[in-house]
Image (cartoon, rainbow, N blue to C red; front, side, top):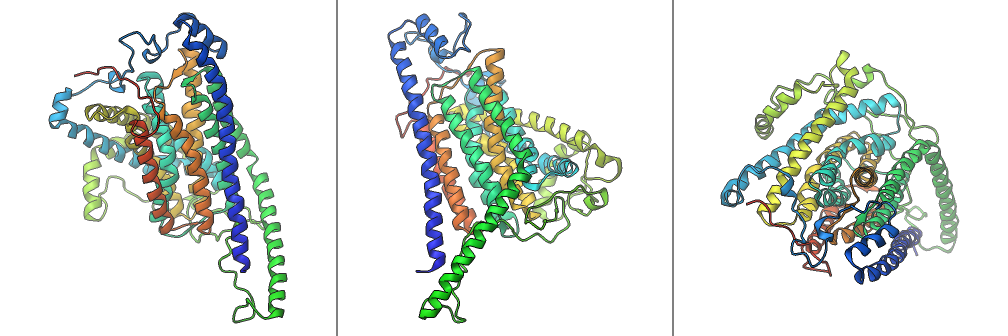
Length: 555
């Protein structure tokens, strides 16, 4: 038996065991939660509405006011007005529903498409450069910068979508956008990085495993608090505090990564010694050897930790220390200016070369011009470069504004076509708000920083669960009332995100810890299957899902 095959089998077993352990833990947690909730629901069935409210006070101490009013979905079942408001009720409408059905919906679709382009332009031209300079000035490791600053910043559209869904429209569109973007980030953005990075992107195991463990914890907590469809203050607070714990973990990342590197080197050395012993034994008995008398080990997929350093002069071009750990250092302006594409000698108002690029530039010129005069360009030399914090702040404001407008258009389109808000959220809104994540990941992957790209993807998902959902739910419960989730299918979709974690780890492992075209194709196909199942669940076509009854919307 080939040694590399035996090692691969062992690793497959270990990775499979890891995935099974995650699902088992989630199932146990869900069973405990279900037992408690089912017992409470059994008592609620025989109680009056006021008695049920008192029981809810005993279960969730955050509900303290006798005058607290749940959404109409949770009102008395005998009430004929028991229904859930559509998200469109919180937004103005430019046309009547009949006018949109007769063709005016095209305007909403074009505006939504245009806004996705604007979000992408702000991210690539202003937002990502400001984050790069911030991370360079702080001397962060590339994977830490990707998992914190870049992840939090590029998740600004999801954050503001969650703000709108939590405090303004009070529907599940923002929540579904966060859940949908989590799957979109893991599969589609990894596919985009694989297709458009212009190189085979090599990965190391520690940043991926570190972020995936935190992500799995976030998913389990999200399913735990969503199970009974009511989020009270202490549940949101737990999620928010977990992000602080994640930041603390990142603070100690240099030490942890050093320990991981030492463990990896010891493991590799032990495997090499074992291979030499077996090679000598097989060479003596005269079988299983290659032409030169040694066993070939080209298929060995051992966990890498010392990837080749990209030969370029770009931002985050950090040296590798003697222990294999990427070390960080601050660079002066002359070093930063070596990146002409993004930071220097680029005239924003000049049309690009190429027919298609020039056409897109003409279509986007009104937004480009307005943004040019409202956001300082920290890619330029001199005092402009020192305005990187202002660039970061103003580009975030622009992302908030465009995210609100995109949310508005998506809700109107869904209402007109009679598509539930949650379906629009996990598909179109999730894709639209993930544009900054996609562009940021592809850009840094082109510079040769695959770990930073992956850390941005997983870190964005962590930020969205702990901050975009948890922190906002906490504020909602403290300021107004607990958040009520109308869709039963979102809990299943959130739980299914565990599958995405186990699948992507196994896929990257068996692909040799690199991102290439094959990886992109598999991720695209897997996302297609995932999103189809999620949509069918939200529509009640598959699974035992109780669909909410929506209130009549504007004509």
